[in-house]
Image 1: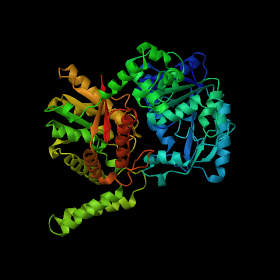
Image 2: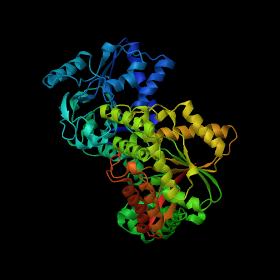
Image 3: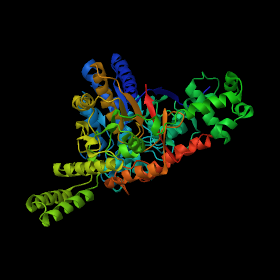
Image 4: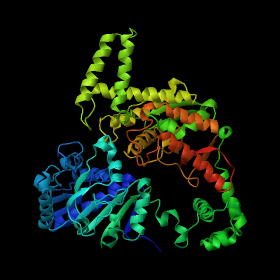
Length: 613
């Protein structure tokens, strides 16, 4: 039994998804080549298909996959948009795919965002005609937006719509703001293939990664067809497949609550999830659940396995209670590395336990993997340089170099356009701002300044939102730190839903470095996964729950406040517009409140961690 109305494939992670989709594309290309027929691909942009394109490039270079007889049509382009702009989908496609394969220039079609407004309608008609002349699209790649849009077919797009100019939804513009260095710089319009144009593709592969897509994925796959959610139209397409990583599939019924669909194989973790779900559904504490509660929610077989509701309730209650670890149960006198993927992930995500571990006398290294310089506003640079100039004017610093630096930076910032790569002086200033804030943050938690290590991994140093892939140089830097500190415990961000993919890339570098380290005889450390600024581990998934007192939560928030460049309005806040400290307070108090609702001990706040096997 299933509620899914679109064929849905769930793979382990982002990389596996990219490989699987790329190999399906390769199958179609090779099958058409055997009959000497060109392949017509519909292509998408954004972070999700990057893995697909990297695997296609590998297949071309290493396995001889040719694109010489491939014709491509891209879904959309911003309007107005110069094709040479770093924000242009023309440039995106040439940098991430076309420039690395043997596709012919005349076979590449991307909607134009640089035609006069009075010519847009004619250009859209020409685009539709080119698709028809090619014989129609064989295989169309799609992503899905938070509003359920496909292409830029925003809520309200009709099933009969064709390529056209559209106004972008406010949610879409907010989600895209990071790429444009501010929502105010995001174009208000775009040219997009219509729903009907997409629907005419002979095969459609729609991709989604990350927990932030899980709710809209469930709605698109399991909900009714809805004009407000364009992706639901795909339920009526005869050959559509949804490809999801594990995080994006989390809200599907077969993943979240499989017991409502029929019999399941009860693992210990699934038992805990089911009983906690029942507690929420009934509004009762775990120890108060009755036989009738279980029967009314299709869980009688679970009770039968344990004999009585009391035995089942008690086991789950005890399993949750055993997850709680106060300071007395945390490590002492142990070498620990906390990998902070951005310069504030440490205080935001694990500030409470860092303070406890410092009090316990552990030897802690906080390794900041990226500079985070992109997330500093230009006005912060001006403010800090103004301070330096004033300090020099008071004869505490040589005035000449300080004034010259301020003048060079101000001249650059006056000429700078949104999205321009910062001059080296500006990048350095922003990096140093983040470093000084990071040191102030860990000092607040009771760690010494020397605990901070700034790795500044090369993959991040593009000066742009889009980063390079992880390379040997990144892995080598992490490996050297492991060799130096030989940690027994390592904290890593296990939240792979950050908007720019930095957490995922950093975790990849750590995994590769750890693999080398252990293979060369290094002792395997225990790996604790934390989450970033977007979610917390559910109590059912967490390995350990670490209570925080009111004073400890206040101290953690004070440490977050030290990151002044990220306070009030962060450059890249993600879909949640609250300040980081507000999100932290809500999620840490929320985890404690969840345990209280389930009938366990009442705590003020809690952090959650998953220990990786």
